[in-house]
Amino acid sequence: MLRLALLTCFATAHAYLWPSPMLDELESLLFEITPGTTGIASFIQPCDTFTFAPTGSRGSSGRSNAADWIRTAYHDMATHNIVDGTGGMDASIRFAEEQARAENVGDGFVNTLGVLAGSATRYVSVADALALGTVIAVEFCGGPQIPFRGGRVDATEPNLPGVPKPEQTLDSHVASFARQGFTQDEMIGLVACGHTFGGVQHAPFPDIVPELNDTNNSESVSHFDTTNTHFDNNIATEYISGTTQNPLVVGFNDTTNSDERIFGSDGNVTMLSFANSPELFASRCSELFARMLDTVPSGVQLSDVITPLPVKPFDLTFTLDGDVLQFSGRVRFWNLTDNPNRVALLLWDDHLGGVHNSTLLSSLEAVGSFPDGVSTSYIFGGDDFGGLSLDAAAGITTMRFMVDGKVEDQGGVGFAVQDAVVFSTTSCFFSNNRTAQYNVAVRVLCRLYMSQY
Ligand code: HEM
Ligand SMILES: *[C@@H]1O[C@H](CO)[C@@H](O)[C@H](O)[C@H]1NC(C)=O
Ligand SMILES: *[C@@H]1O[C@H](CO)[C@@H](O)[C@H](O)[C@H]1NC(C)=O
Ligand SMILES: *[C@@H]1O[C@H](CO)[C@@H](O)[C@H](O)[C@H]1NC(C)=O
Ligand SMILES: *[C@@H]1O[C@H](CO)[C@@H](O)[C@H](O)[C@H]1NC(C)=O
Ligand SMILES: *[C@@H]1O[C@H](CO)[C@@H](O)[C@H](O)[C@H]1NC(C)=O
Ligand SMILES: *[C@@H]1O[C@H](CO)[C@@H](O)[C@H](O)[C@H]1NC(C)=O
Ligand SMILES: *[C@@H]1O[C@H](CO)[C@@H](O)[C@H](O)[C@H]1NC(C)=O
Image 1 (cartoon, protein in one colour):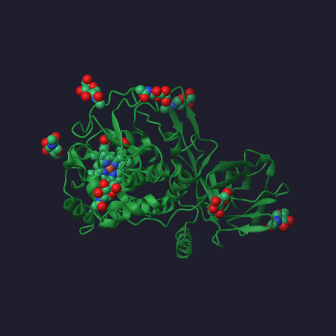
Image 2 (tube, rainbow, N blue to C red; image 1 turned 120 degrees about the vertical axis):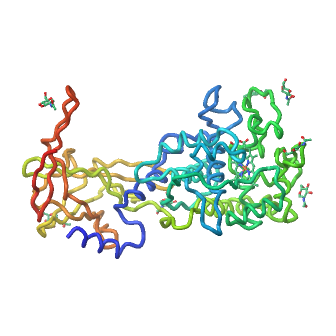
Image 3 (tube, rainbow, N blue to C red; image 1 turned 90 degrees about the vertical axis):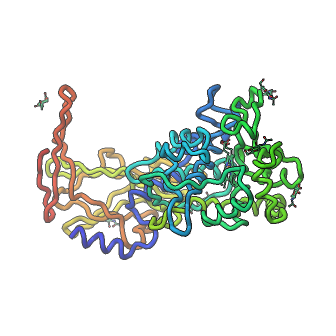
């Protein structure tokens, strides 16, 4: 019975349908962000935030979390081999063996993982968290939106080396990007897009950058452009106008001036177009960053681009209390238009063919304003915060919502819930001897049977 229901669900599911544990989490991480306050963005705003500065969290170190996150994603991806399908965005950069390589010099990778791996869960991979870091750093520091797909799989061992180093020749860089799956044009673009953030530090690159002896730049970072914590096309305008201080363009040692060789490799055509049009630069970077993040080992299947789910139930819980099934939860609507006289209903089908409804009270409405839209949330059961009291035998199979007369049921699929296995209120935890008793009810042919563990 359960298996049949799932098959039906997948057969009609093309786009992202609730519930999907991974996409539900990624969608929240992507869109439920109050700039500077909640979510991953709180670690990069203001955009000169550097969590690991010895002298405090921002400004005076010359470094930024945002720049570290973008470089980390690139170095994770750059091991990709388009011919044999190995390497790519798979969080192999988290292995000490990769971090110990000369091509991955510096502490930016450890720093980045220290923050972003905290967003990984049993459903969200570290690789997805690293990709999200780049999307959020770029978007929240002045850059374009980057279409985000989920489903990266974490590598279980290091990849082969292959991240480009500044002292390599132009030919070897062209070959390296080709191996990663990028043309020469795309190489110029991707390097310019990445190097609109951050710079080269003295400690890992003492031969490129001297100690700067600047209290406002305690880590001695020679920045790629004058707006190193902000996405803009100054990387290109300063290069084209000849005013650039980019240490990989005007460094005293020509051998390590890789940006100079790369930027000039098409006679400056690409960089000139970027310098002439901030819009072109932004749209090209959105496209190239997305390509970078979606470069994954062969066999890894990424989801469709994640957009805000229009109707998203969350925090659902069931508890069996005698013959009563307590059902609580909430639902979030995205970009609902204002309506002071709103009528919102939760409707549900039970296992016995019954159809029920309950009002979602607008007096308990919670509104959140996010950069990509507005969320409006309601609590099931309205005034009764304990939720809804259902007949345990009848239970619940599928929910729908009705807002101002409009039915929201994911195109007829509904919002499937499972009350096949639920905890009983007789479960308990004894703090004195740290033991617990879990009483679990299992639904068999529409009856809930109790067992004790
Ligand atoms: C031939 C290709 C490339 C070379 C040789 C190169 C070289 C470098 C070097 C030497 C640094 C200094 C790192 C440090 O001091 O910690 C750096 C920083 C950086 N790179 Fe690249 N890079 C290349 C391509 C890219 C690409 C494609 C991206 C991203 C799309 C990127 C993003 C960054 C960022 C954001 C930083 C700043 C890191 C920070 O300030 O913490 N790089 N790059
Ligand atoms: C900073 O100080 C060090 C040590 O005194 C010196 O070697 C270096 O040249 C100075 N850097 C600059 C940019 O003046
Ligand atoms: C350091 O930054 C402060 C605040 O922006 C500024 O007032 C000061 O002049 C700067 N010092 C140097 C040495 O650049
Ligand atoms: C320039 O850089 C290369 C590669 O790092 C190094 O071998 C060479 O010694 C450097 N030259 C000078 C003059 O520092
Ligand atoms: C590209 O532009 C820079 C800055 O104007 C200039 O120094 C450089 O010679 C140009 N490179 C080519 C290949 O035209
Ligand atoms: C909600 O339930 C009530 C009572 O059973 C019923 O009269 C009403 O038609 C239901 N509303 C909807 C929209 O199904
Ligand atoms: C939600 O509204 C915002 C403007 O507030 C708009 O930019 C965005 O495209 C809308 N999103 C969806 C999914 O409709
Ligand atoms: C733990 O303590 C509770 C309450 O005092 C008691 O009922 C239970 O038997 C104890 N469990 C064990 C394993 O000792």
